[in-house]
Length: 193
Image 1 (cartoon, one colour):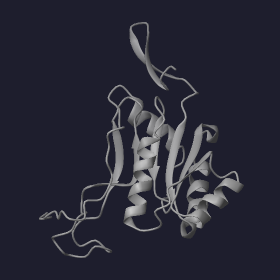
Image 2 (cartoon, helix red, strand yellow; image 1 turned 90 degrees about the vertical axis):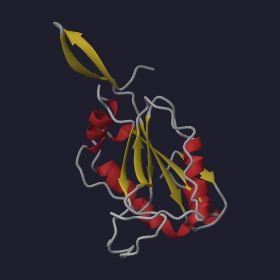
Image 3 (cartoon, helix red, strand yellow; image 1 turned 180 degrees about the vertical axis):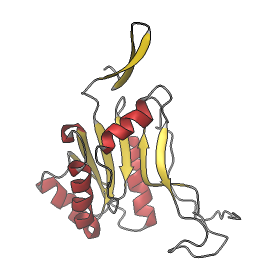
């Protein structure tokens, strides 16, 4: 399959060429408690995308209820039972399942259910940032810094000001199959700035 973004020469000058078959796979860990969040999250992805036909939603269900409900509807293309229940261990297992299910040669996004897209044509922005000649391999959001509204001023915490799997977009130009998102709760990180 040809890449979504390619450079071609026209009169010795580089131009962009878009192949409209590149899909964007959105991988989401879901529990029964987060189904309503997911509906809103999904609506924001679709509503602000320039071409909703590109979007493919994959759910990693933390409980039987969410799996059953998603299999009965048409909200996702694929629902995978993870079965560890809610909490960080179940969430991490769902994220590892998502990494194992990344679709080769396409853009993949890992997204929590409480994420909303605010940018119109966000998919075109991702094309530019991930697939351009100087494209990033991965884009994401960090956890908050010291003094954040939910983490406080403590300087010892596992997550502060480091990349997170809350939302990240991955370029098809790189292999992320070895990515391990599992938490290491026995290891603390000193945060000093």
